[in-house]
Each structure stands twice: as structure tokens, then as C-alpha cells.
Amino acid sequence: MSQEVFSNAVAQLGDCFTCVAGDVHTMHLNFKGAEFDTWHKLLGDLYKELREDADALYEWAVAYGINAPNPNGAAARIEFQSTEGACDNTSAPYVLDVLLKQLLEYIVLMYCAANRAENDPLVYGLQDWLSGCLQRWTKQAHYFNGRRMP
Image 1 (cartoon, helix red, strand yellow):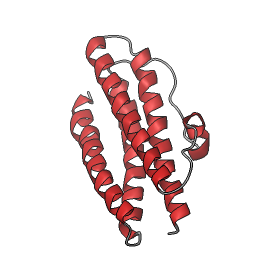
Image 2: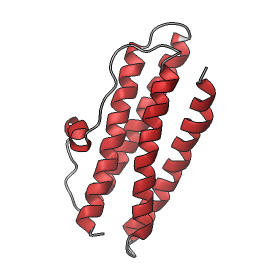
Image 3: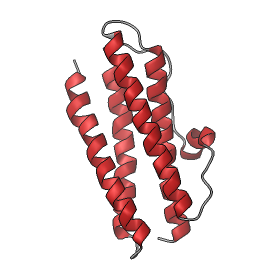
Image 4: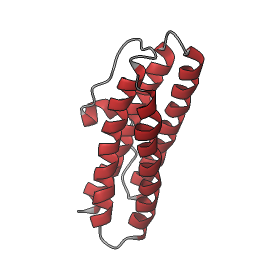
């Protein structure tokens, strides 16, 4: 995989994090009903973590020599379909499940590509970062969110 293709793939993963963060933020703002305080805080915290990871990925892309893309165009670049409307404690775990699984698919693809990349110190750093990212978001999706399902 060429460095340009690889750096664009890193930026696309940043776009995925940006889009999922946007949807989680929308859920955070529009949550209604029972357990509002708990869900509002949880979704706010997840949003912040997702944004931090998106920022880190865009920084990795810049380290590979491309300009960071404008996050405002993220959804169009990766053809992301956003969720809309209000959510409650019944629908939120299901919407979050879809978003986190989609995110994990992108992370795994990037992790596999990084493992096949040529001998490059930047790749080793990115592999390490992706490994931690994969652990964190897998646990969030399958352990925590799995237990929120009614």
C-alpha cells in the first residue's frame, strides 16, 4: 500500500470517528425520558472520546504528509448515513450498538492495513495506537453497551 493511500485511509478512519461522534452528540442533545441524567452524561463523555480519537487520527494523517481534511465534509467523503431525531433509554442502546459496530469495522480494517504496511516507524506507532483504540471501543460496544440492551 502506498504512503498516499495509507494516509488517506487513516484520514477516512478519522472521518468515521467524526461522523459517529456527531451522531452520539445528537443523541446527547436530544435524549428524553427516564434516566436522562445518566444517559446525557454517558453520551457526552462518549462524544468527547470519539472527537479526541478523530483528532488523533487526523494528526496521524498529517504526519504521513497529507493535509488534514475539513471535518465538516466527513459524512460525504465516507458516505455516512446519520441518525436523526430524539432517542430514549429504549432506543439509545440500539442506535449506539449500530454506531459502535460500524466504527469497529473501520478500526479493524485500518489495523489490518497497518499490520501489512512496510517497515516504517510511523506505522509502528499507529499500530500501537490502533490496538489501544480497538480495545477501548470493543469493550464499550460489547461489554458496556451490550448490558444496556433491554
